[in-house]
Length: 340
Image 1 (cartoon, rainbow, N blue to C red):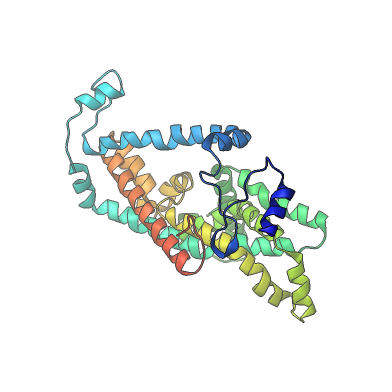
Image 2 (image 1 turned 135 degrees about the vertical axis):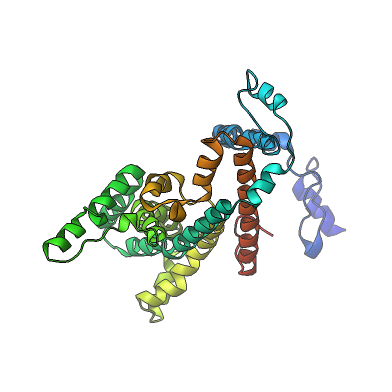
């Protein structure tokens, strides 16, 4: 009683009562917590900053999903004066477009080529930005590091037309390497028209163009690593490689898991413009992927319902891959795209 009276005297006669004790003697949360109105007022600057991005995502990503209903119709844009008139006048065909797609051998060839290119890029391209980030991060001089980053970032801003032209001038039939081989009595090479080498050619072009840009996320993750960990590992006698294995790579593991899940989700999207520019050179047997298949089979022929059906299958398959890869990330102890 004396302790309670003394506590009340220190708090003052008009003070709020002390919070009720929760489990373990900790103060329990107030009922209701922070109201939605207070949170909106508190986070108003952040909401206003993200509102344009949310609107763009809504207009260009989610609203077009309503157009997928044409996959169940024989859609003809010339039947009416506008989209809604054409949609209303186009006959309903149900799952006929999906059945046609399922029985089309060219569709399965496109799926096979897409998966082969994805696996090659996953094995040979995905580790390259990680390795480049480790190399750039190990450079001690800030000027050398800034110069290296600028050189690695620059090809990302080149168009695919320029990138393919550069490769054509180097490893094409009339390229520098072929000319030098012919001058020395050897037969020239023409990698740009070799269908068997096409997945590796795409990977080489992608590495040169986008590997430098891909190191940005990894460098940001490396910048957040506590330097005391490196100093403690050095004091314990760890060399550069052991510090990289036990300190650097564990710090990058959550980012690697997240980007790997996203990369797997894009397994059926392997670069439309890059492949379309080289499709005629290597032939459709090697370069026909799902995106080019939709372009030629659906859009150029005016079969919009069939193109929409392929797009739906591609989206559902990508979603399943994301869920499966995220489940694997959870089993490995990482968060992935979302938590459990």
